[in-house]
Image (tube, rainbow, N blue to C red):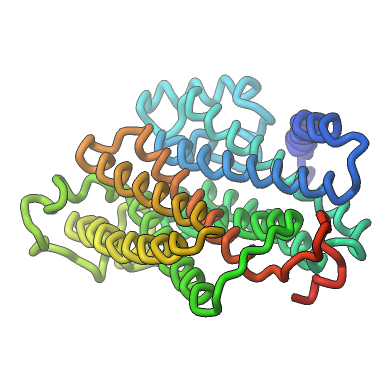
Length: 375
């Protein structure tokens, strides 16, 4: 049976053309710079676009555009919604408010285009790192792992569509974006080489706070992918109760099930959504306490005070936007900023931990030395 590869080839050509825009800007800005400076700038650019991709992925989910194109990687077998106008129009006519509309198709495909651009930049970064592998301030395993992980993310993106927004896959897709941000943030900080002396106790505190934040991000993703944001009305009480009497944790945290369905195939009870929301809300208290304690400890160190201020500011932003999501009935802007704040916290904590593990640079040195790689 013949397979039509034309749409996939068109998508690859489109992704390559779009990737030339940030790559051209990077090359123009970095012409004449050292190889180290060029790779550091490309890593930062890729980190920035990956952050944007994470937030736009949230926008795709929050606008119910995840199935705007119900196949993958194209849209009804085409490289763009424009070429797929007829099947999109037919789907929209049969379900005007359904999963497929022209607007939702464009949102979904723009997300895929941006993902392909990020993938192309990571590929260029991996090739460049391989060529300079003996001069990198970290093992080549880091850019190699980043390239491997962006491929895994692509697979998560595919299964998000083909499995019809299966909650576990969508949650893993968001978690995978945080892993990708982590990989890039570590490399960027190793390129910068700005060591920050922290005690072993404080480094362990950063590790613990990162672990707590990781759990909270997963819980937040589970809330979003199950559309449980409005299951609790009011704040700080939930549906008029300090501790909701009706919560179904068993059904709520059954991982292997379809969207809106329980593990036995029946409809997911509302009490399960309340349990999902309430768990995220309660663990937010633990997360904010951990971030606050770490920020207070950093504040006592003049060289780490800026990092402490950043953590406090991002924590306050998360509390404000999380509260706004409930009180203001899940406004799009607040939900997007809430996702962006979570991603920013991940990057900030990873950057802090990476800096604390760097050895002091020799006086007058601006470029990390290969001898420091094993640290």
